[in-house]
Length: 434
Image (tube, rainbow, N blue to C red; front, side, top):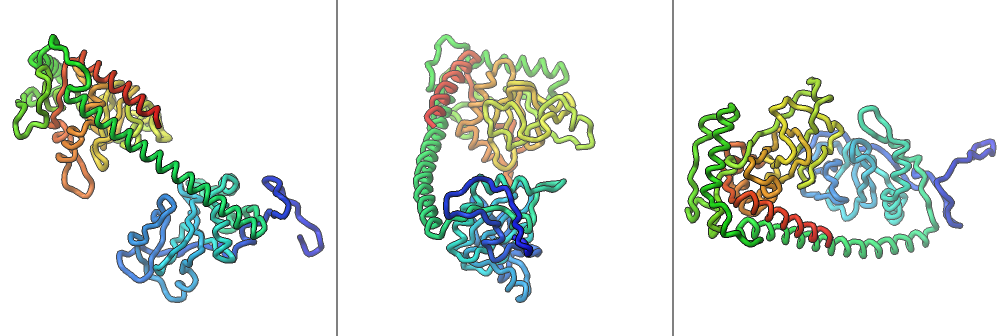
């Protein structure tokens, strides 16, 4: 309403029940303002809460860094219980955190906006609004920026929030909390089932790679035949210039040795290093200045993409057609393995693809089934070998040489396919239970 008595009419998102009102967020808060700009320190008296410290609606205050700040600034910026901080830029834009049970002296960083409610009781209802669909819809309309989306304090204060009578707010919050308890119980039970399913899958894989999942054929080709196939394949690749002479050297692995990982295998199974079963390559990331970065032939994969597992078809990156020279990609049926950080994550390519230097790729030879190799690399024995061979740095890394030396056990190609089919069926059933 203006001084001359006229009233500005605005479009509201939807009609409210009697006694409710649409109001601007700024009108039900005492203050909305930006945080403090400072460098993070390992020691100090005042904590500096950043966007990255807020994970899954929680803050581990012990890991929050410190900062230097004057007493005058501290009086203006110190967080108190009931405050709500909101990320104002980047991929976490709009994410909010309700300050409660705060015992440390703390301020908030400049990429956060603080929303101070009129009283702490009112802050609970405001926080629920900041998690609603209506909030995110309005925020999407007001956020902008050429590089990355952002929102300023002024625009944030103009968001419309539905406000019910005080007693109605209390009833709504109580109902929400009761429903959240039910949802949390369901989540807990779902997580239990997920964990149980993963344990069962792991057990199936381990049993399968001990030759105990499917019946063994006494007439199956002996391990000596498999070994001859390996030698012939390597010799062919050497003559084609794809292998070096040193790669033809065989390392004898005897079952029962102290350094062997497999015991009591069926007699027709062969134990070999992983370098014996396929063409192994480490990926690479080309320069963005290269034309193939934007117009390449092959989709590009990073370790985070490998979570798609056995059905790796596309990249989660915006640039899904990042290309490499021919020697830097592997064809459909190749198995990709993360070799840095969370090492051992495995995926099976459903299309030809390229990958970065944090991944080792394996294109299996003709006597190795790609699905069998995928399941094999997920077994406890192989995963433990990767961890053991990883370098002792701040980030676990397994280089190509050590990766090549991992021991694996496998039968004939026909039995491999039978095992892979059986595992696939069992996993399908386990997944359907979730």
